[in-house]
Image (tube, rainbow, N blue to C red; front, side):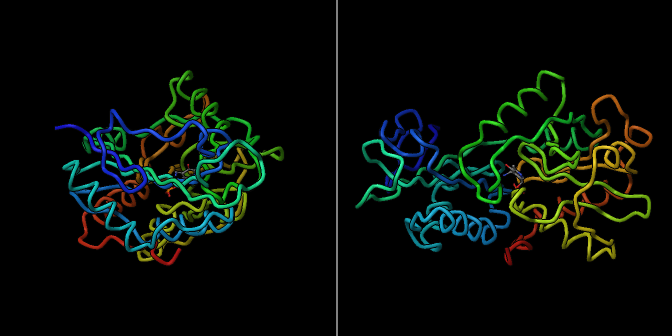
Length: 292
Ligand code: PMP
C-alpha cells in the first residue's frame, strides 16, 4: 500500500507530496508543527496537541488554517487512508508561500502538510525495559522554546551529538548548569524523597503533552511533583531519571554521560509510571492533557 500525505486540502502519494520553494516554512522556519501518537488506531491526547498547535500559531500570529474539528477529521482520514495502527501523525502549518521577505507578507494563506509514520510498538518497549543513556549538551537555542516551531537546528545538533556518543538523547543544559529539557523530550528526576522533579513550564521548555499526562498519572498515585529547574549534579546523583515525549512515552534513563544512575536499572517507580502510561494510551479516550 502506498503512503498518503496531506498537502493543502489534498491527499496525495507521499512520493509526490511537495510544497513551493518559497514556502516560508522552508525559507525562514516560519512554521509550527505537532506530532501525535497513534495507539491501536486512536490518537493519544488529541485535544491537548490541537490546543498547543493553536497556541503556537497565536504566538506567531499565523491564523489557524482550519477549525480544530476539521484538523481532527483530516488526522482521522490520514490514519484511515494509511491504515495506521501504531505510529505517529506529523502536521505542520507554515505562514504560507510568498516572495522571500522577513516581514509578514500581505494576503497570504497558511500551508498545511501532514504525514504519518508506522512504528512497531515492540521497539520502544524493549528500550523502555532496559533504560537508555543520555548525554548532556549546552542549550544555546532561542528563548521561546514554548512555541513548537520547525526551527530545530540546535535540537538537531544535540541529537546528532547523542547519536555519535551512542546515546538515546541529549539533555540540554543552560549557562547556570540547569537542565532545561531533552532535544526532543522533557527531562525528569526522582529526588531523595521520592518526589518527581521536572522544570516548570516557562518559555525555556516545550510544554510537553506527555509531561502533562504523566503528571496527572503520578498525582493519581499520590506521587508528589515539584516543578523547578534541577542541576546536572542533581541529575547525576538522582535516584532515578527519565524522559517523556509522544515518541518515547515514559523512557527510563540509566546512564548520564559516564555516570550510571542508581544501580543501572530503571527505578521501580519509573517502571510503574511507564506501565501506567502504556495503559493510559490503550484507553478509548486518552485525553489527560486536554486542559493544556
Ligand atoms: N521538548 C521538545 C524540545 C520536544 O521537541 C518534544 C517533542 N515534541 C518534547 C519536549 C515532548 O513533548 P510531547 O510530550 O508533547 O511530545
